[in-house]
Image 1 (tube, rainbow, N blue to C red):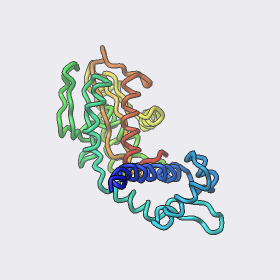
Image 2 (cartoon, rainbow, N blue to C red):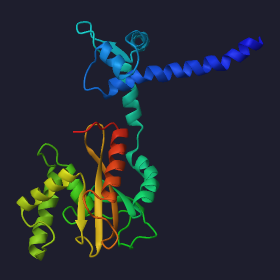
Image 3 (cartoon, one colour):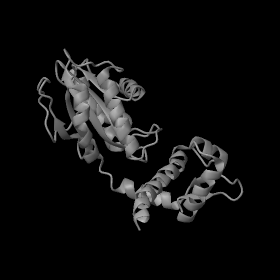
Length: 273
C-alpha cells in the first residue's frame, strides 16, 4: 500500500512529462510549412524515429495528426484545427494588448496607446500616459488622421493588402490630401504619388512614424498587430517629446514596439506575409 502511494507521484510526473515530450512533435508540425517525413519530424523534435512513431500513432487516433497514405508524410489533423480555431475565437486582441502595455511601458518609458479601426477611422481605445512624458492633447475615443499621425499612417499602410485599398480608406485619404493642398502643409503628402511613397516607407520599416507633424515637438511610432488571416486588428502607439524620444527606425522604442506587436500577432495566429 505504502509503495503504491510512493509510486503515484512518480507516475503522475512521468505522465505529464510524456505529454510535454509528445507535444514537441505537434509544435514542429505547427511551425513547418507543410507535411513532414517521420525522420525529419523526429529529428526536428530531437527524438528517435521509433519514439516519435509511438507518439504519432496515439495522436492519429485522437485526430491531432494525419498521415498521407501515398507520401507517408505527417501533418496536423482536424482535432488540432478545431482546437486552434476555438482558441483564436476566444482571443480578445485589445484585452491581450492591454495586458502587455505595462511591460512595454517599462521598456520604452513613454506614453502608450492602442487604436482600432472605428466608423470614422483609427480610434484610440486605450491610453496609458507615462508620468515622465510630455503631456499631449489626446484621449480615448479620439480619431487619428491618416496622413499626419503615426497611427493613421500605420492603418493606411497595413490596411492596404496586395495593392487593394478599402474604398472607405481611399476616400478618407483623398479627403485629407485635398485639405493638405488647401492648407499648403509641407509636412504631409500633397499628391497621390507622395502618399504611396509614404505608405511604402511605412511598410518597409513595419511602423507608422511622425516627427513634429501632428503636434509640434511630439514624436510618434505605431506598430501593426495582425490576426490569423493577416488582417490589421489594431495599432500599438508610443508618443513622446522629440527632445527625449528616440524616433529612429531601428532605435530602442521602435524595436520594442515591433517586438511586442509581432509577438501579439503571433499569439493571435498570424504567421507572417
